[in-house]
Image: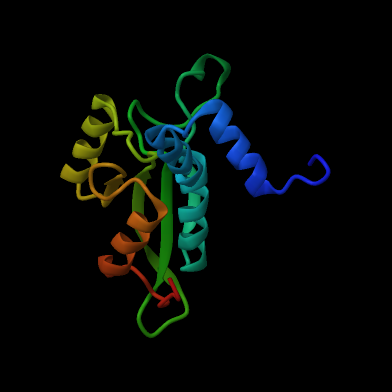
Length: 158
């Protein structure tokens, strides 16, 4: 900063030279900083589920099967979460809960082939979630859904 200039003086100089900032542009820039990417939402929600006893398995795109890479089907959810249940009266585990989640960032919706996959799995009895359709595409939207889902084992501070 130039000697003798305060941040307020610089802001006033910029207003005189460049004019008042466009409120919509400033609001959009502020919102962009608050908006998390799909990867960030996925990572935070996965961490929360892991803390509540879920095992996370990331599905891999099926587009590279020619090289032997890929697990899944067209439209399959981003993540499969499994939580093993203990058999009553034993320490043995015999069944598991399964949760599929298609992550999206705010403002994005699943594509038709993803919706079709979820509808087929739901018809088979699966619990699937599509962010942006079943719940808001935010970490807070997921937290609200999870708190009310009946799946939470350990009450959280969030």
